[in-house]
Length: 469
Ligand code: PA5
Image (tube, rainbow, N blue to C red; front, side, top):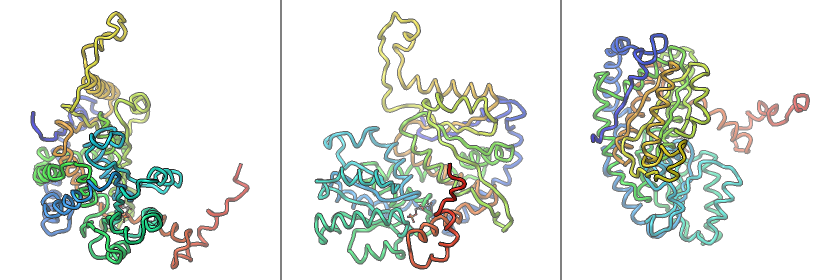
């Protein structure tokens, strides 16, 4: 069995789904020289230090720092609580779901051999109060990892203020540094200043690495290392993929093929991109991809400054669960989607189905098979059913779920995002549209300097009774 991640795209071709909806190899081939130029440009940008996320896998010193600090805190805490949002949370959640026990937090400590992990990526007051309740009596065995590149995101900042106050009041000011690890910009930002001032242990979001491209930096590596994920194998997988996706030959480069196929379907009236892992372990990689694809590609200006409205809509689904929820729509609703399955060739556990109730014909055929067989056969069945309805599907094949292929997957999708950005001719690395909402929050929460926005917000603060039923 090869340990390489593979990408299968035949079920998106006209051979399988017909001429009207399928792509032809000639059509793909006709873009191969444009793709070669894009890949060369991306490689040059990487060499010139403009795409720092691609440099992360070779930064072993960075991994060593995460590992050393993780080794120090692992035994002295029972809970690691991450405070972070967006790119400062989604990648590390995905790593934990993929690479640790599905019921990790419920295991007893001897089985876990590491603290429980809680990732607080929202400011729901009831949820956060629930966490604080849970930590009552355990605060002295809890470490908080505050992750924020900018250091002033309102959600993370408010959680941090609550936690800092709680530690000070319950354990004492002199204990703050034992219970807080900060991951932020190396030099600038509010959190960096506070960390230096309060003397917290700190890690870095490297310069030039945007939040949604930061999972292979300390952002993802530190919590993963605390939870005993092998971060070196993860980086090795990413590094191996980095080499594969440096290849400027379209048909040998899975990131380029994935990006091109998504781009062509978008042009042909399929702007919806569904990600559907047939594996619970891979389910949170859909959330991670959803942010990567949406924030990177949803833009209203081309690189030359022209007005456009660009953006494929990433949608998450889970096999087999969503066969019983979404597939009706995917087969008979608008033919506006391309569906990417994630499939696992060899599951860690197959979970046999016993020959129970062998005399009940309608279910006895399941006896002697396994859940691994069932889930993979259901994937094939769905692939076939979608093809019968002329719906394009793609498959990313994991040889198994372990650090190496997960690292490959992350780098493949990150580079695919860079390639797609070039194909759509937009800047894949900024997120200007997120800013207005952040500023409006500052204004509503009374931050100095944002008073001017208050007037524009008035009709939203005070509801018009005429429209209230
Ligand atoms: O990808 C991004 O840049 C964003 O999703 C950020 O990660 C998110 O807004 C959180 O920002 P910060 O890490 O600065 O708190």
